[in-house]
Amino acid sequence: MTTIRALSFDLDDTLWDNKPVIQNAEDSMMLWLQSNAPKLTARFDLEKLTAHKFQLLQSRPDLASQISELRRESLRLALEESGYSREESVTLAEGAFNSFLNKRHAVTYFEGVEETLDQLAEKYQLIAITNGNIDLRQLSISCLFSHAFNAEDLGVKKPDPDIYKLALQHAGVDIKETVHIGDCPVNDVTAAQKIGLRTIWYNPENQPWLGNRQPDAIISRISELLSALHQLEVKTD
Image (cartoon, rainbow, N blue to C red; front, side, top):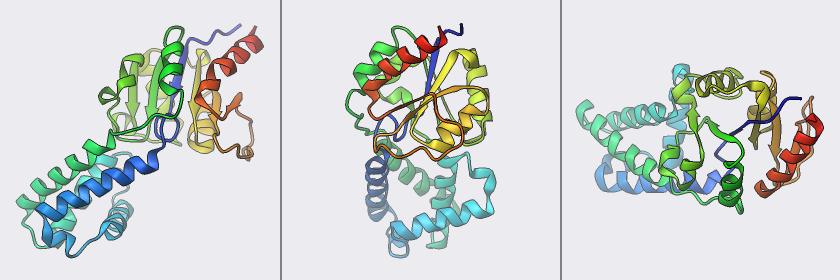
């Protein structure tokens, strides 16, 4: 029998809807730039800045797991291209990024997230593993997690399974005693399965499973986790 002792969670689009969060953060960044760097906003709208960022990523693949630095550096280069000095560009890029990051943490949890995590934390060790650059310590649920890791911390991003291996090693957690929960079939299910993690797919839209190996359980609401984990523990018995 292998007891479940720890749960690892994806964050964005698993515990909250991330699209409006990023939209709000980018809108805040653009308003800051309009007030503080008008030469940039005369040349770049949000769509062009986004394209600029992805062009930089093509030439700097080393930034793939460093999304904060990618955004900062892309902003700095765009500011220089808009006529600001390097020194001005560094300062302005940091200000714009901080405006983005402030709103990046204005998340609205899916229904039942706080209550469910609170119950789970009484029985399991909770760990966050994300590609995103959110600082879990700034959220109300942070007290329920023993550890939080992101791609920037570990230098590797999903779907590379090493992100799971490294995170769980740092947390001192046994892979065989851990279940990973996430919304992405590739990043959260298939990648986690590759190092032997059991997985629960958060599938709120009830999409068909198109991968090879099935997740160990599928849920459409986070509140279903308690029941899903109970069923997994029954199976292990």
